Amino acid sequence: MVSSKARTAIRHFLKRLEHEDAVDLGHRMLDRALEGMDSSLDRIPADTVEQLLADLRYRRLEELLADIALGNRMPAQVARLMLHGQEEMPLAPLSDAPSERIMITGAERGVLSFAHCCHPIPGDEIMGYLSAGKGVVVHRLDCPNVAEYRKFPERCVPMAWDRNVEGDYRVALRIEVDNKPGSLAQVAAAVAESNSNIDAVEYTERDLAMSVMEFSIEVRNRKHLADVIRRIRRLGVVHGVLRL
Image (cartoon, rainbow, N blue to C red; front, side, top):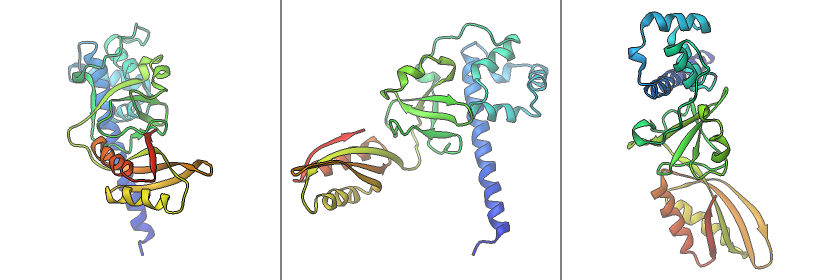
């Protein structure tokens, strides 16, 4: 049994890790905004930073950086305040140049979340969208919602996957199969043989001849997903597989 004291210590430890992740991500986001204005956080005079923190009622720079990562402060607005003492200036156009993207490893789960509408995984082209209180929500660039998000460039964060990516990522598949006993078991076995976990399965359509199922599975990256899909498509009961 884990004692109450131990549980409290674990919660504090995890909260501290989340705060450190937020500070690191906020630092990178602010630096990127400043670079777009030909500056950097290291080049801002210390007294300017201290005055800004006082004006915005932050005790430490780390608190401001964490708030940026959590979507409570827009990095471009903070950058303009640091450089010009005002927020109302024309926004620079959003750049997707690789050198200007924020690289993520997937370990930043405390301050990053992955959109349920498009389920981005390593290998996908991605972008982040700052949502107040939620931090950065990562979307695939081909997500149907991205066109709407780009109307708010101050909330868009160019991102890309780092070379070393951690963890498993959820992805949704729409699978058409023969409506007969054992079809679900065959698909589930193919997923398991690909070293992927199944989170959920739901029948969305069904008639006498065919069933349509939506699988929620976990994969490491696009290569792993391609292997899962290949194994499923080889099954005689399967008529089609589509990533959602």
